[in-house]
Image (cartoon, rainbow, N blue to C red; front, side, top):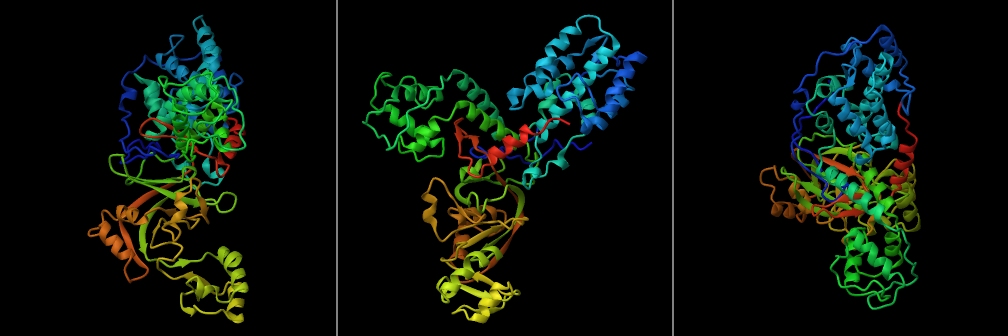
Length: 570
């Protein structure tokens, strides 16, 4: 059985995912699942068994919304072979307590950010009502098979998500975490004293996921209460004291969202924007990735006019992404939520040990990858080895315009094995060899190096890493997608000291001394690997319970939305 429910550490950002990203709580035990045994299995008549075998062998059940289930055929078959094709969810002609509980779980799948119809949610009440009357064995067989397939689909969706992230180009592996669903149902659910609790244990253990579930309920309620009126658009920002015809709607919306306290002294019929309403707009801006200046500018009005149903969908997509993440990590991780432009390092208790602003890859050109990898070493005063693409597309054209470009930018030309060719004016011969990719370019270590004074390496297929920068002023921007894909970290020395905390003698003071010392390209291996998660989430809930929303900078919400719409259950 491929179940690993024990883990040492668990993350809780979008992002990230994300604010309040990580939780390092231990996974709950699943021992309760088999606490109560039902009566002996109910055998079927030859006619009933024939119906059940036909459904299983054909992997087709016309009673289901998604009739075909080829990917679950073997697991369904193994479950019924174990029972010698006796019914799993029926005893004495009636559904077991476990069947009643599981059907309720499927009916309420929307509460988990899934679509209840995918698990025949609206059908279970009528099916159970029919079983209150004497039923034929074929009818009982069809009910039993439908509940088995639906339960398997639900469990897998809750454990690893609906969409395989690798199909979207993300370096996250869910395939190795798939449960043996036949054994899981047989040993943990079918005879469970609390089958709902047993199934809930397959969910993401991360605190951020749990908070997102709460936010989903809250925002669904808010969406049902909102009148949907649009605020008037603005050409020039509206500031405190100015007239704005949308003030009444603004008051209603911000009260519904909780940014404007019910006790705040405002006048619903007023057209003057000011007082507590400005404070409320600042709060809204702060949770929507905007500059919290209280000005009603075009971007703020656009975010205010975003339907709350769209916010609900952002949370649902974020929940899907949480399910892609592994439940077990070797040590407290570093988590970077790309749309949030934020990094968090966690401690053993699940608290944020460190939080920093980051700069990520440019949208449409150099997106930072979504991945999981292990950080293995830190390099102080590093060289910047210019990637081949940047060399040919950016550096070579600049050399052609200015043969002194290399020396002016503190670069040097080297052979493929690192021997110096020149750090001065570039000759025609050297330029030709650069164009032919026979030579490399790297930037010398020091304060003007594009990587800053430290880089943190977690080997991966995309060759991205975390590092400092020679342009710290960019961290003052609210949208920070400026890099070629690597992650620039604000005050990276503190992150390096955190990463080296288990390396004897590597205090923050020593880290800073090494960064500002005279020895270049100093590599220090970590005492143990540190998981790095680069994730993508446009909704997240912080430790105070505030839900934050971020711009879909890479368009990945749109991509995931389309992928989910194209994935009928097999």
